[in-house]
Length: 163
Ligand code: ATP
Image (cartoon, rainbow, N blue to C red):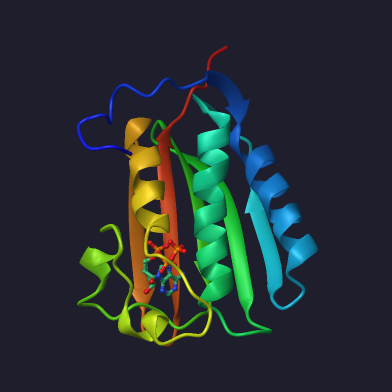
């Protein structure tokens, strides 16, 4: 992540199925978190990407959902295919993000007031890393959040349908 070094990091590009990866990360999460209800809705979609980076990005979204969602509430992971893109979405029923904070959540070290006040710490780096990983693959991130209702964050990556 060094400044000016963004395009020189070597990636290990392979073709793989994104929903397999999402389900794998979800299973790992469920083993360590019995506090939330997890749900998944996936359909197969292939991408060409660095698998470990995409896994890291997926973990960041699910970790955030865990951290900012009260116990007992639902976290849903979905993967779908649309207009040449694969969409991986993590939707939670958590504290939400204040509208004025939404444009800043991808900035390095930014944390909304609600999360700064929380006992569970964080550096504010997670989403800036997830965004960097996504854009490095020619994709983008979308966020939709309502305070006290929940948050939905999607990673969109170019799909690679043909072998
Ligand atoms: P870490 O780098 O350890 O993940 P962090 O969670 O604070 O720390 P980011 O992942 O970059 O950092 O998130 C930035 C901020 O965006 C968070 O501090 C929080 O305010 C807000 N945020 C991110 N995801 C969610 C979510 N699912 N629900 C509510 N707020 C969120």
